[in-house]
Image 1 (cartoon, rainbow, N blue to C red):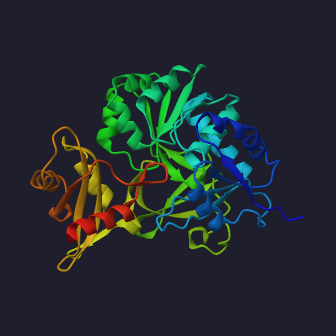
Image 2: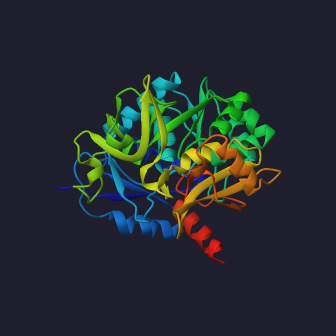
Image 3: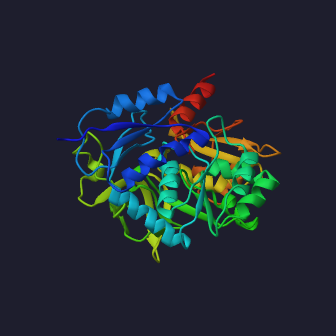
Length: 386
C-alpha cells in the first residue's frame, strides 16, 4: 500500500518536546513521511497544506517533507529521507567535536529548528526550548543557556537574533559560554561575526537549505559526505548524503535535473577548499548596464558604524533600468545617504553605491531570519513614488 503524507503539528515553546517521539520514529525510518506545520498559526497551516497536500500518496523512503521559505510565496516541499537526516546530524556532530546538548531558539517547523530536535535525538539529549512565537528575547536566551547541562552545549541562531544578543551583555556572556553557536538562515555580515568572536563567542557559519537537510557547509568547508561544485556562471551546486530526493509533486524540477546534485540560486567560488557565497543569482541588480550583487553591497554597508542591519534592493528606474536602494536599521547615530555612498565607493565600484536610503525600525523577514526582499522592494517602491 502506498504511504500518504501526514501532518505533524508542532507546538511553540516547551510543548515542542511533545513531538520528539514522532521525530525519533521518523529518524529511524519507522513511520510514513510527515509535513511539519506550526500549531498556533492557522494561516501558515493553510498555506503549507494547500501547497503540499497531506493525505495524498508520497514515495516510499521519505521521512520529512520540509517547506522551503520560498521567494514566490508558494512553498516547495523538499523530500528528505531518514538516511539523509541521520547523515546530516552525524556530520554536524563530527564537525563540532562530538554530540552535545542543544538549545532550540528557532521555530521548530523550519529545517533549522527541526535539526536542533533531530540532533538532540541523535545525541541522546533533551533540548532546552525557548518560546519565540512572539519574538526573540535575549533575556530568555540567558535563562535557557543556564538550564542546559552536559559537557558540550550548542545552539543555532539567525543573524538578527545574534544582533539582539550582542546588544545585551548578559546574553553575550551566555553565548560565549557555549561550545558553538551555529549561525545560518541568511548571510552573516563580517562585522557581526567579528564582533561576536571578539566577545568570545564560538561562531560557526552555516550554509545550506531545506534541500540539503539545512546547513551542510560549515565555515566554508563541506561537512563529511557533502560535495560542492561551481557550475558555469558561478552557480553553486551541492550534492552528497544530505541531499533531498526532490520536491513533492514536482518530479521534473530543474533544481534536481542532474542526478545527485542540487542547483542552488547562489553564486560562489571555492578557493583552497573553502566555499565563499557572493550572492543570489536571482537577486542581482542591473543598473546602467552593469550588475550589482546586493549581498556584496550589504557587506560593505555593514562595516559603517551607523548601520546595525541593512538590505539592498533594486527599484525600477527610467534611466538606469534599476537603481540601487539601501534599507538600514541604524545604530545609535543614523547614517546619511552621502556618508553611505562615500563608504561604499571607497570599497566597491561607484555603481554599487546606493542612490536612495530608507531608515527602518526593522527589516521584513520571511522564514527563519531571511530578509523578505519582495516585501521590502514593494514597500520601498511605494515610499519612493510618494
